[in-house]
Length: 506
Figure 1: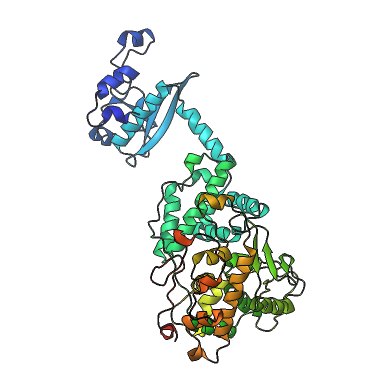
Figure 2: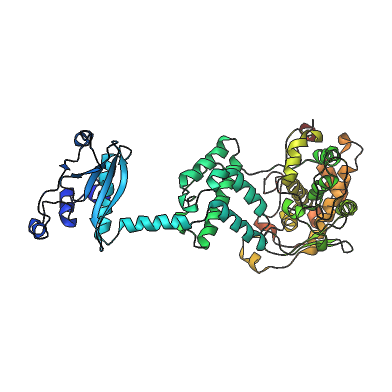
């Protein structure tokens, strides 16, 4: 507040402010004499660096008051420690408060803080009481790891699927020292340094996730009234990491290499099956990891997700390849509720116990990082790119994007999408069956050199070279709004099967 008086172009000088708020002992002399405070204070000095540095060799704690600045002084100890203090009159009694130490807090900083504090006192503030309350709140504050435990407990009870990933990133990113601090003591600098360590460690994506999840954690604390929303230490911090748009998808020859060479991974068999299942269904990795037998109808060949990422129920038609994978997984799974659960693999037993847990969020990606070289594919990709590959095949085969969108269970942002709750089961079954036929043509090839091109695959599936595939499909919507996918116009699922497939193989 006081800065408006001292800034450039100010309309009121310091002397005038002193007169208005009673800082200058030279004012109101008659009133001071009447109250017994007319005489100058003992140990009065001028507020400048010379007078402060000249104070030496005191035998006891002594306060030196600054001339013309009532209640502003410097306490000096026999050991030479100098502290800025402010004395003021509260409703109850006269009080003193230490506002900093010299020379760590400079003269100009101390003077500005003194002026601000005196202005606040004039409006009824009591700095000593506020400090006492702040210390009391800090004692009552929970530590950050306790808030994290509350957040994870809340996430599990409300059915949040990514809580284990958030817990891991926050715990590893912030570190034990920061997690043991009380939430009121954590500063924006603490969070900014933790984020910067991730960026310096060549993990920019992890830095973005750490900031996002930590901000979400403190927002949860604010919802419990453990801190003020405005005191979230993540507010205002920027990672300045450019967002990457991934476009990686596998070509037909790369699909062949992946399908056959993933068997060479020295991991539990259910891990190989889960990776193949991602490609067959174009499902999300989290959906496959947490897939339960109770949600699968093996007779009707339907996998039902009661609640998906967009909050809607989603049904996935299980193609012949998907059914083969599930049938094999059942052999190893026993009575475990999760389809792709896994014990710690020891290289010998493939059998899964009833108490085995589903894959962790990093399990599939970790398998890829460790054993990717066994695939014989030059350009690296990750498990989520298998979902993009399935979607790209579907969009390319039908020549339209809406079929891929239905299989991916994406929602549209237009008004119609709010009212349209049709499940599109028939259309999704058609799309996944077509994807299945394309995958069979690829993986049943004699070798990688004999894998058919994308155009050959599409022609073989629709068996009519003179007719466009889209002409053989029911017209679901007006595609004039940018739905059709084209090889010359990159869309969300880039169709680039015209390139030389052999370039991506080692």
